[in-house]
Length: 277
Ligand code: PXP
Image (cartoon, rainbow, N blue to C red; front, side):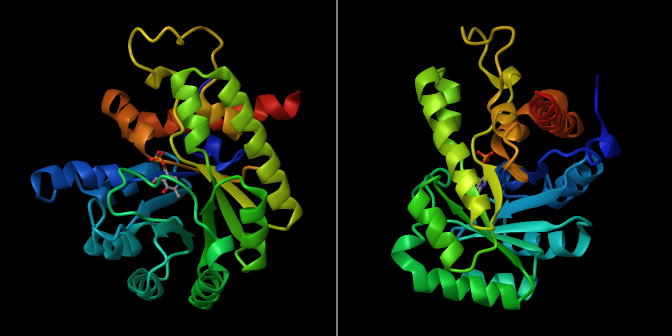
């Protein structure tokens, strides 16, 4: 069965936040105005994206300030603004007033967001940021590892949501490391369960992909292999997935519209299968 457009929003599956950062990465490679991340966001919404996610990094390596303003002006679904916990970013978020914010750790030299926030080690800073953003009308999520102490701390500082970092799980999947994959999946499940028991809304993301994204000749591509997206989407406690890099890579082959439909269908089918078992 194929799923498209509104069929995909009607089922009990995690919402899909489409991260558009890498449209801006490609644009910036030539320093011009094309491809436009806002145009990509609009197409993503048409194709079934529930949320548009972007990360305004301190070095502006992909999304830029003027993109943020145009996203706010033109995108008809909730924006999920990812940012580091700095005064500059909190000011920009307050001015923009996106529906959702995901606070992330940021290190200048990293290629992507490598780990989760240390909420435990900076409780008062996190509490202040959560309060400030709540006053601006934003729903705040903290991007953390599936570590019970960090999850507990996130609840204590007043964040209504957490996004659990699936990077280690995704790497185990790409590497075909079954033992590590099982370990990371267990850790994620336990983290989600704890988060829910503390009254948090629980999201997941980072590095998630489809089986057709594996490299040619990869001995792991075999019938019945389950994608990292399906493994995570099947977990009943996941209410949102945020996916960027593999989805944009997939779009190079099949187009952005079909790439979004493929990731949504993967999540919907995985959740349906899990709930019927
Ligand atoms: N969630 C958060 C908080 C992120 O920082 C990122 C990467 O920007 C993602 C999800 C998406 O990760 P990926 O691009 O690997 O799918």
